[in-house]
Image (cartoon, rainbow, N blue to C red; front, side):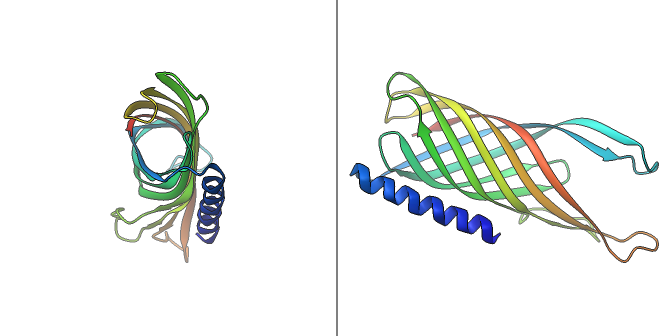
Length: 194
């Protein structure tokens, strides 16, 4: 948690320095997206130790980036979202940047980077279980289709890494039981930006 806060503060100071160099008045920007998180999981079969099961997973994701334009191509701000995994509902909050790699045209290539913490505020655990969030990283690349400086439709491909910790009800002679999870997903999102 402390590391995520330090990263967000560091990004903000770096972005402030870039704004000072470009002398561009601050302008609000928003980038809202929804899509799917695609991944593959491997876990132990509950009744047979040593037997592993592999399954493909598709999860739903929604996020919105709200920030300021630091230059004609760079924006920095805060990203808030919700990710519905099979057994966890996490709400990541992160510092993020968006940077246009191409300057002109109706279709522009851009990059994204978000670093933060996924909270389990909306998770409804069964009795004996407690889900906690963890560090979240989400770098990506996308296409922005629309006029420069105006509204646009976006398509983004990114890698999403989300950590979580689950305290579980102890079994038989156990004093405690827990599980650390790392959700590694390919995120495909469709969105709008302005």
